[in-house]
Length: 167
Image (cartoon, rainbow, N blue to C red; front, side, top):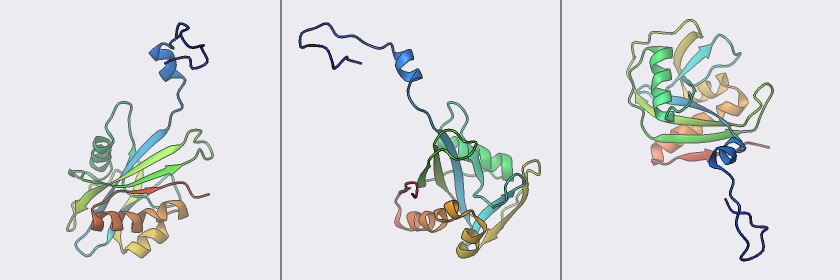
């Protein structure tokens, strides 16, 4: 890094990389998987620690690629071995409540399944079920509900949709 306040021709000063990177802001990263059935219904999970349903998924661990985190969470939560596909939705949220850092949420296409053999992880989840898109959105928090139509549109068009925080 250069010191842009130095006079032209003056020696430049650099910040050591470990100091530079330590002072950068950080974010939490979470992933989810859009799984639908052949009728277009959306798979949601009901955590026992939240009042709303969610897309299956969870937090990315230190150094873990987000698509690997999504596959790991689907395996851990539902017992599903899923090939994680295209990134459908990128969602950003500012710090909120006890979460002191911004959150980047990545929703991946996890395919279409006809009545998958779900092995629910009861330590965290009370239920998992497919819902029509409108009903799925109604079961999600108002902030998360907008991910349903965004993800379905992104899948249909073969694009990734960015959803900035609403303010």
